[in-house]
Picture 1 (spheres, rainbow, N blue to C red):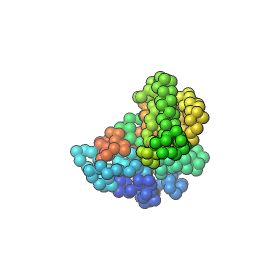
Picture 2 (picture 1 turned 60 degrees about the vertical axis):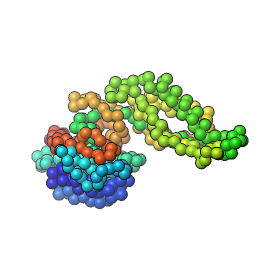
Picture 3 (picture 1 turned 90 degrees about the vertical axis):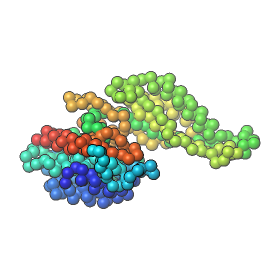
Picture 4 (picture 1 turned 180 degrees about the horizontal axis):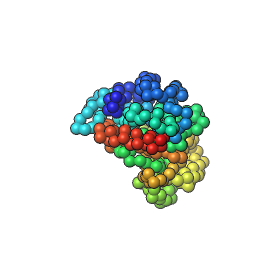
Length: 340
């Protein structure tokens, strides 16, 4: 099968929150076994290899985000229109997986000195459990790892870091007519957020790294909730904030500032994720991406290369058919070069 037909079949699997993870794994495993690959591990992740020595590895996550209710078409049936392929996950990142499966089918591994491994992971969109499991299971990874995230056919050799926090506040509930009898958790949260924003603007944002398209660390308060009624002093509030960091120096400053504010406002701070930025320039590329991928867990000798345009998480997600075809060629060329 060609990449487009494989992609059509992959889209049919509802892997939102890994719902049909097992069915998709069985489909991928069948294709690769027909190409001479063996199954090294099969659970919620799938790891397959060919030959006993590996110079190269490919990794793709099988889960997708939820489609939402604004889609104009069935997100689980790929549709073609004006050279575009529409469907949930075609960009992020079932297109990459389809290209991997197609590329290996076009390679005669009997003519190559070394083989390769393929990793298919779960839970990338929420908690990165799949890549964490893979790291625990694998003693070593191949010398070069390619991640099929969408890049519009451009090779990326770096990514910003990620820091995510859930920050909670407790107050004392009281009637709004006698607010002095209570303590507003929302006001505590607002104070914390205002000081954090000021620290970010006056310190963190001023440091720059030209290796990234957005050359400074970004900050986003993405969610806040608290209180129970307009006429009650709120006894609980929490918010979620993330930083896309440019280096370890920025990380350390953020950790220190949040520790200070935690004590000042009596907050409970949960560190949800901390991944450092990486940048591995080479003759192949010096470009980087702003979004986080599973490459951030390995860093060394990682290339990020996938289809485009980048419409990940968008309504009516799509890629160009010619981009998928080009990606198959790029993957095949990399296999033949690195395993030859």
